[in-house]
Amino acid sequence: MTLLALLLAVATQSAAPPPSAAPTPTTDAARVEQNDTCLSCHGEAGLEKTLPSGEVQSLVVSHETFAKSVHGDKLACTDCHTDITEVPHEARPFRTKREFSVAYYEACKRCHFANYSQTLDSAHAAAVARGDKTAPLCVDCHGSHDISLPSEPRTKISQTCSRCHAGVSQTYTASVHGSGIAEGNPDVPTCTDCHRSHDVAGPHKAGWKNRTPELCASCHADEQLMQKYGLSANVMSTYVSDFHGVTASLRAGSDDRNAAVVARCTDCHGVHDIVRVDAPNSRVLKANLVKTCAQCHEDASENFPDAWLSHYEPSLQRTPLVYLVTLGYKFLIPFMIGGLLLQVMLHLWRVVVNR
Amino acid sequence: MTEPLYLQRFTLRQRLEHVAVMTLFTLLCVTGLPQKFYDYQISQWLLDLMGGVDSARWLHRACGLTFAAFTAYHLGTLVWSVLNGTATFSIVPHRKDFSDAILQVRYYLGLTDRQPKFDRFDYRQKFEYWGLIFGALIVISTGLVLLWPVTVARFLPGEIIPASKVAHSYEGLMAFLVVIVWHIYNAHFNPDVFPFDKTIFTGKISMERMHHEHPLELERVVPHSTSAPGPSGHSA
Image 1: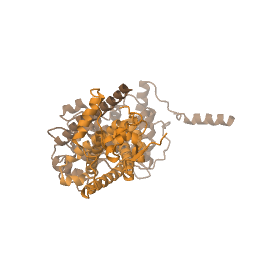
Image 2 (image 1 turned 30 degrees about the horizontal axis):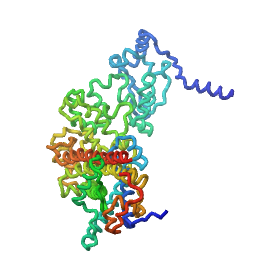
Image 3 (image 1 turned 135 degrees about the horizontal axis):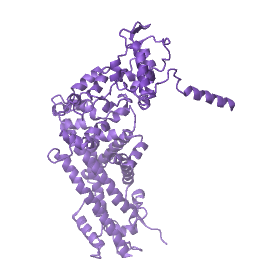
Image 4 (image 1 turned 180 degrees about the vertical axis):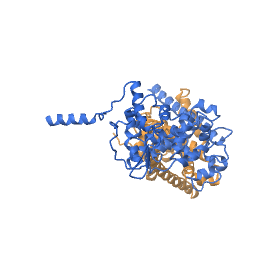
């Protein structure tokens, strides 16, 4: 019992944040004074350190840059650099610039805990855990002393992602969504609208693919939004009522990679390279549709794409056969079942009367 | 008390065909209807029970192809019996069936006290038999289109495929409802046979039921037997 209490006491102690010898300044004046003290050395151009790897780590922080950053009027240097307690600073064992960044990875979570814990579920964190030294940390996307709002202007988001995902970014920029962003259109999605930001998911999981229709529908089933661009908001409902859509929605809960492939939005329309459906290079343009279908349906013939109603409800003008068969059964079934029920009831009534 | 007399009504082959159709029809409904009504909780539950939509589809296709084989066999022997002159044509609809139906409804409504007299099959049984045959031809042909859409589109317009999907699912639903409403009533809940008309399983029908349900046939098979009415009258 005593041992347990002792263990608990130790555990509680070790869980507490490390004591900081340089207390975080509590008033504005104290913060400015402290920052001025640090910058009296670190504001000098040319302050740098050569690391064992041969890389040169600049130790200069521009007063102006930091003042303009979102933290400029909020944080003192030691709010993040909690390990700096004395001058000259204690020697640090960094061999590379990356090790230096990784060591400061946890600094942000003191204030941004929710975002930090979201990153733990991300594909990026999984890459970090695998030991991928290029996988991004907070500062790789947000910057460090020069942090500004990440989504202002909105074009900044894809520019940030493009630093690593250059190929995808280039494709996206040429797409109907990417070109919209460049024109300042607030409605079109940028990277994080589909992939999310801190908890960015790996797109190679079946679970992700199963959610694709839902993802696209979050904009494309929005009647008001689609009306603005002359687009149909029925694309999701018509997809779901078709064979592909039924299969996709029945599998939505599963994560089975072995299940046979079923077409989802992106399989026909493309992903980062989505263009207008009437663009000459559109995969869903009539002339290109056979090739699109043949991705799954090998040997698809000229007639085959007509099997798909192109997100239209059956109509007499467009698909008379489908429309008339539907209409016929809508009359036949109630007529047939109603007639039979009537006979059954008449029979039973007669039985009762005869008794 | 004398033992009730029985007539042999169905051959072993006919009884086995009924068991096969009954089993396949049930399996096809259980695997097919949850796909039509996929967003209902019970459909999800049934599909999960079968190991997901993909295995349910495989089961549906296997049953469908077996059902198609049975139908082909049935129709094949039918054609053969016509060709070699052994066919009896007792199931073929006749003008009398329409007047029987009208008379029966008039009787139900209390407009007449006269009831139609039936031969081997009454108009309801003929309706069900031919309903099954034509329904089977529709679900089988559209089912084959849905099973091999790419091949079909090589010869026919692509619109055949979604039209087949509509026809297949509605025809299946209608067959299901007809069986639930009509067949289950006639074979189980009809006061004349309640709780269970065993004839299609045993092949036997009592003389008493023959008197009431198929007097014309009885007159042909056992002449002058209809002059004496059965001991207890049927309810309707």
